[in-house]
Length: 266
Ligand SMILES: [Zn+2]
Image (cartoon, rainbow, N blue to C red; front, side, top):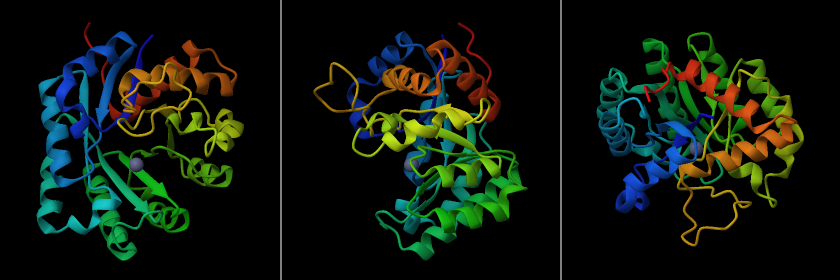
């Protein structure tokens, strides 16, 4: 079985002390390839460096998360354009809107989101998108760019069934994380994840965040890591009425097509 984690924040400081062990555990838990999320200027450069150091296994995205939208200036735009030219960078993002925390003002978030959609449209690259409590504004801006983008994934989807179908109607892909396993705030997802068609569904850990609450035994450090992707895939498979192998196979095929990845040699 081969799994692809389409969103792991492996540049996070919590991975610095045992990075190689994290990758090895991922491999022994069938995670064949990982997209390292770039979510800030520095983080996007670090994500590329990790991808270069692990060819064929790690790949990167380059973007500025809405939380960091205040750092999006002309230099940042130039940096992202430079990073987007690198072979290991497979998507623009993480970008989008987050009105849950509003770490950056909404107007600033909208501007940074639009700038990054512009880069992706000009380069013909897929986008890796984040949306929280901002569905209407997010959908409106995405709609205006959608025809110019080859593909778009709404990562860590946590919203309603109506929002899901708004995205599917725009021919977006959907990323599902261990949020699904959260009995306090993820149970609504279990009712409609089976409605995401094969070919539009991908899986991710969002590590080190969102440790699936149903993982046993619970790791004492509370850090999520790519090895738990298999657990997420199992839970998702059950909700979809599929076998683990089926869900693994089609989400992996979808991720390879979405990001333009070849299967690793070994
Ligand atoms: Zn996100």
